[in-house]
Amino acid sequence: MTLKPVSTESAEHYRWGEACDGWQLLAREDLSVIEERMPPGTAEQRHRHQRSRQFFFVLEGEAMLEVDGVQHVLRSGQGLHVPPGAAHQMRNDSGADVRFLVVSAPKSHGDRAAAPAIRTDAE
Image (cartoon, rainbow, N blue to C red; front, top):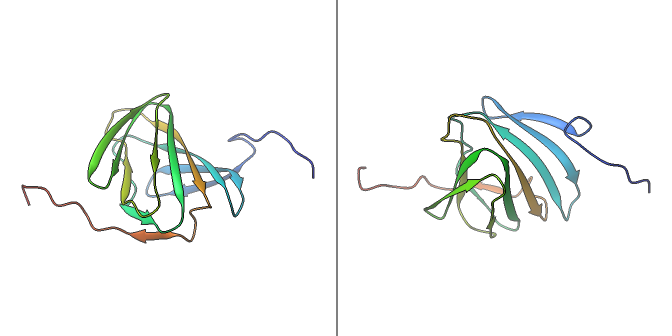
């Protein structure tokens, strides 16, 4: 097996949502590492994973990661663990792009289930 460095320039790129980007830096059954970019005002669908545990780490910008109804502001250099079964949603409520890593063990593709929206007192 030949090992070589990987970057967003050499990794498989994909688009998700309306304007977000992802780069598959490592794609193994037991471990996945993805770098993602979210423009201002974008969000992923709230969901959960049955088996995958994830770690979100912000490289640049500021993101809001809601986990089981609790909102966490993550700034550059900060991360948060999302355990299997926890409903979560990453959002970019800021006015600038956010770039972050998503580390999943095992891989999260094929292990995603919708999670209901959070009700607020105003609803």
